[in-house]
Amino acid sequence: MAGVDFVDVRKSFGAFPVIKGVDIEIEDGEFVILVGPSGCGKSTLLRMLAGLENITAGEIRIGERVVNALPPKQRDIAMVFQNYALYPHMTVADNMAFSLMLAKSPKSEIDSRVSKAAGILGLTTLLDRYPRQLSGGQRQRVAMGRAIVRDPQVFLFDEPLSNLDAKLRVAMRAEIKELHQRLQTTTVYVTHDQIEAMTMADKIVVMHDGIVEQIGAPLDLYDNPANLFVAGFIGSPAMNMIKGRLAQDDPHAFVAPDGTHLPVARPAAAAKGRELVYGLRPEHIALDAAGIPAEVVVIEPTGYETQLIVKLGGADVTCVFRERVHVAPGETIRISIDAEHIHLFDAETGMRLFG
Ligand code: ATP
Image (cartoon, rainbow, N blue to C red; front, top):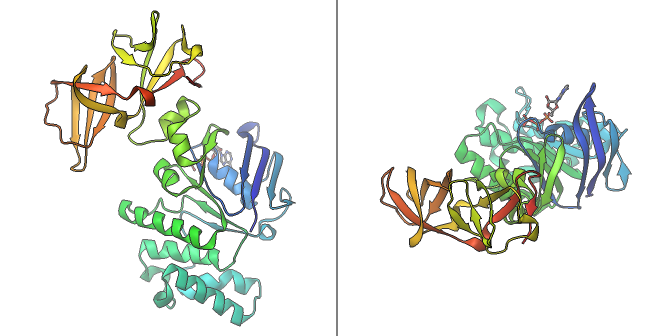
């Protein structure tokens, strides 16, 4: 096994830069997820690590080796793609054995590796089937089996769950995480789905427009987003954002454009006099008969919780309550805000201000 380092990595297609200087350190055995909206460059970064795309500038290291000029075969990696890419005319066993057969590994070793991988993935009884005789989840497992038999230094996953339905995706998420816990192989995984990133990763790299916005453990990014982009991208339902400024005579009061006052527990000195964005997670709002009035716009009960969109400070604000709330659109509820958990961002730079 080995760690992976990206050092000031850049990539342009023609004159068009898509990766604009990326530094990421991935430790041996770590499960790292590159996440970001479509077009941010995460697949390009993974393809450069795999050797499927040239590197315009910078350095990629796997373990101690700089791999910039190494062909994919010599990088000791195994990649699992979104579309599985199984050979339809080969059985599950042959699909899994294929790369080892190409490498002319001895038959006894191939058999033992395939059988071990099949055992890990619950495919032992399906080894004689063809891909068309498998469900989507089973095909995805075969694709992973093909990677496991190679016992690589690094696993690369490119949106491996996006072809599966919602329920299967949740099940496979847990399987991949468990697989990583068993094998402890360094893994780099690309997705646009922040829930996948939050639930599976040891470390998340949030990308946007060819740069890294923030790197951190999932809950660290959730609790301490560095800027408005990360704050808005991580978390579902998303963080509410209300524009305004601190009151001139009271740094503990944030004033929205319609004059509503919202509480601030720890105002940053740098926030004074600036245009700000007040960041408020839906779960940090509570029903409170003595609280701030807010008009109900939409009610979405899920059974487990109630999600409400209310008008607050001139913005549409999402709240999530564990209790059932019996109100109608147009009615006014009263809420309080957990001021310890709000964030203030500089509206101009987008950076979070620490109080
Ligand atoms: P998605 O989730 O949609 O796959 P992504 O974050 O993985 O998005 P990339 O596929 O890495 O994004 O693409 C990053 C940018 O590079 C995009 O603007 C894309 O159009 C561009 N791009 C990717 N491949 C090429 C190519 N071969 N030639 C020119 N431009 C490319």
